[in-house]
Length: 268
Ligand code: PLP
Image (tube, rainbow, N blue to C red):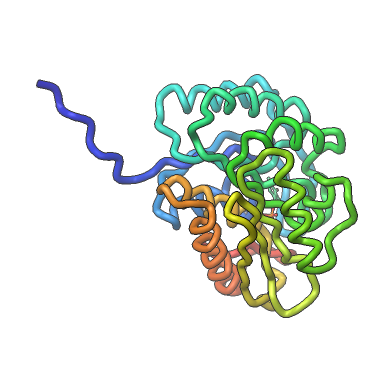
C-alpha cells in the first residue's frame, strides 16, 4: 500500500506581477506578505521595473508567451490555492494571463488593477484598461481598485465621498468580479475607509489614517494579504478584514525602516 497524501497544512499562493528591485512593491511585497501571513509564496514575473523609493526609471516587459509559460509550468506541478494579479503592463499580457487562468476557474483570484506608481509612472498602457475590464475582471474573485483606478475602469470621475465610492463599487460588479473592494485611501479626512461590494451587499472597513510618507507597496500588500486568506479558505469579507488590519500594522511599522529618501516601503 502506498502512502496516502498528507493533508495540505500550508496553503500555496501565487503572485502574477511586476518586480520592484527596491523591495517595497510588486512581487517582492507580495512574497513578504505571503510569508508573513503563513502561506507558501510563488511569483510569476510580468515585467521588470528599475525603481527605488523616488520613482520608476525604466520598465522591461516580459514577452506574453513567457508569462503564460511561467504560469502553466507552476500549475502543472503545484497545487495553487489562490492567485494575486498585480502589474499587467499591457494588452498582450492581460490576454495571456486570462487565457491560462481560464483553465483554472476553481482557484480564487485577487486582481489589483495596478495603473500608476506612487511617483506617477504609468505601469499599464492606456489601451490595456479595456483588456482588464473585458478579460480579467470577469475571472476575478475580488478586485481592489483605489479611487483613481475605479474611476478609470468605469470611465467616470473619481469618487469624492463614501456614497460615490459605494456607487462605483456596485457599478464595477457589472464587469463580472464576485466582489469589488474600492479603497478610499485617497479621500481627504482622518480615516481610510474601504467598501466591499459582493452578493452579500456592501460592507465597510475602517482604519485610521497614519501620518507617514512611507506607504510604498500598500496596494500590493493588501491584495496579496487578501489572496493569502482566500488561499486558507476564508470568505472575501473575512479575508478583507484580516488583510486591512495587516496593512494597517505594516504602515504603522514603516517608520522603523530606513530605506531610501522617497516614499519608503511598509514593514511586514
Ligand atoms: N507593482 C509594481 C511592479 C510596482 O512597481 C508598483 C509601484 O511602484 C506597484 C505594483 C503598485 O504599488 P502600490 O502597492 O504602492 O500601489
